[in-house]
Length: 131
Image (cartoon, rainbow, N blue to C red; front, side, top):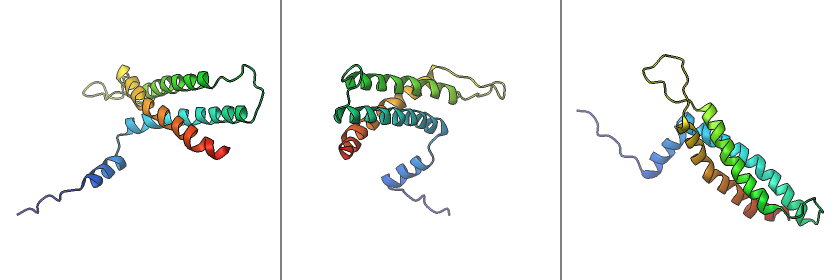
């Protein structure tokens, strides 16, 4: 008689899902995360310069900088994911890589929370540490 299936806890199930995430999802998240971190570092440099009294051309454009940050993270996350996440080929010809708007949608929806979380971490956690 076979042994009964061991029931896993909620945390054990989530940890296993995290360790075995599908490669397209990992690629979508990492592409958006890299872009968001690079742009957030640029924003922090601009914010610190303004905070220390630097006379920058154009004055205080932090709201515009955040708007540009969000748009660029969403667009680049969508485009990069569209480029690196092919659709499954199914029973079609082997080696043919197909792309569709669904790949870009995956990148867009992965980029939304990443853009928010990286900017919150940059402005609410890292910025106070920089003085």
